[in-house]
Amino acid sequence: MAKKSFTLMVIPDHDAPVKRYTIQRSWLVQVGMGLMLVAGLGAGASIHYLQVAADASENRILREENLTLRSQLKSVRERIEHIGSTLDRVERFDQKLRAVTLLSDPQRNLAMGPTEPEAGTAVPATDTQFTQLTTTDTPKMMLGRLDRLSAEATRQELSLQDLQAYFQDQKSLLASTPSVWPARGWVTSDFGQRLDPYTADRVTHAGLDIAAPHGKEVTAPSDGTVVFAGLEGGYGNVLVIDHGYGIKTRYGHLSKILVKAGDRVKRGSPIAAVGNTGRSTGPHLHYEVRVNGVPQNPRKFILEE
Image 1 (tube, one colour):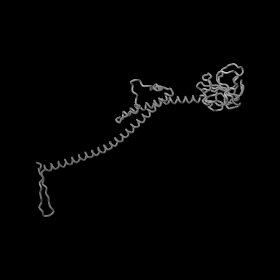
Image 2 (cartoon, rainbow, N blue to C red):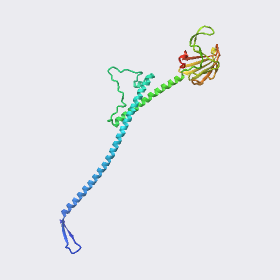
Image 3 (cartoon, rainbow, N blue to C red):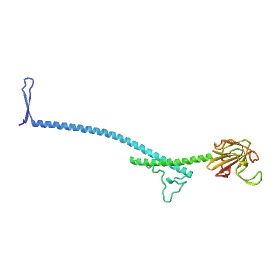
Image 4 (cartoon, helix red, strand yellow):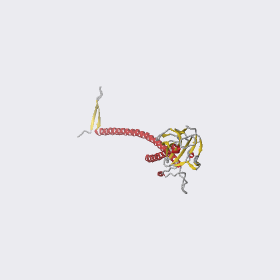
């Protein structure tokens, strides 16, 4: 049978008697199990401590990231509000421009000019859907708002492109409108009915007769293209300029023509000289403005005094 106890002998270095100690096997087993339990608890405590330390470090990192994300979300929210406010102002300005230019926008149901609200309907607040943000908006909600802002920005871009094309066309029209005198002098015969100086018959005078010294410079009253330069019956040397939009100007009795058919001219550029060619009683410029072939009073187009 296995021994149930062990004897521990202690032999001193000198003459002291030998000491014997009896140790029970069960006691050694209990001590060993106790040591193993303490070691296990120590190892478990160490592992738990390491886990807690790692979790604490990760939690600290997560808190810092959370603070950073909150700061970024706040910045994004502020930018969304700023962009939304800007789009609101652009949309209101777009409506005003379209009202002024008599342009409508069917896609967004913009009317021309001010309108009164219907009875029983509330007037909308100044803030629109683009600026209605709250502190509880989730990233998904803000992404949805960003999508709507992007779509509205695209619509605004297309709308402003329409306005740009309109104003570009108006600029071209203004540049093509004969708004200045082609030559300075004395108006001896106005537009309308008059007595023919040769026959004394009442006839329609299709333009203005501007008396000026022979050879005085004649300038283009607006941008255009020369479509005719040559002799034309009783008007002598004649020049015709096409300004686009159905507008043409004619210059008669010229002593000299400085441009030829096909030339582009700018407002104020020299085109001819006052003369006395054709059926004329003295040096003067016969000046006509025709819209779609119909003579118009040139004074309606001249903005100068």
